[in-house]
Image (cartoon, rainbow, N blue to C red; front, side, top):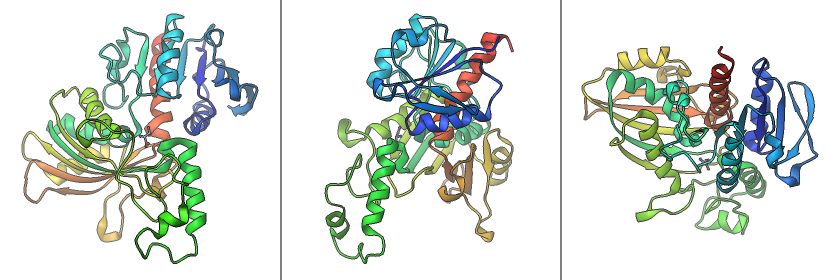
Length: 350
Ligand code: 2RA
């Protein structure tokens, strides 16, 4: 029998992409149950071409469920994932609530699929979208060269902050479109007013060097996630990682510049060979022909796209890369679905 799946948080920005992905991967699951906050209960959503009514999140929603994907705020996951797990459900959770719990594996199927099998709490965590937007490519290079250090800057899309992020960018763009704004200090801020939504500053005609909440010594929570999660996924607890997270006026697809240092000397030819053949990675790197990945082309696709591959000028063990990944697909819904499919295969002996 095919296993029963619950999708908790079915109505959010990630949930919507999840239903598309589940419709494209149609033969894995038996029943697919949609669960959301009581506010969304009763809504009908389409999955696999059928309308399904959304149930309110409650203990009974997990009756008979084999695997549950959670895409809800941290506090909702913290409360409800253990409730589902106590009923024997394997939870694949996309919040930050359990990612760094030593009894919860943090899984990227192309990098550490074996980790999903050991889940003492019945929970498997899905990494943050910024980590996920680069880690498949980094994992492939690490397997060959042995990673020592990462220096990363992100260029994060507004949908990382959910529907509110998308709505905020669209509203701000309509306020600045066709104007001469962006020519004197504060003019964009005045036009946008208090309408900064989930962001610290206007994001239209701007870049904002901030994502998440304030942590010690001026670091952001988003920066700490990239560091902590990369270490855990790669099994490198002492990996040196320096990250600066930046929000840009892109709807969906996070980009990152990466400086990666390895154990010993690397060559661009070997790096290109690895990236060209690694599952889940597309090498798109021909600057002479104007070919490199950009969010506008990568959005809606599954792989991690890599371009601008160069050897560091001042370090023969270093590589410079530009990476793009759809933050709602591989960055969230797709990786969650892939983990859930690994678990489904295990449950059905496939
Ligand atoms: C963001 N990574 O882009 C966050 C969402 N998890 O805001």
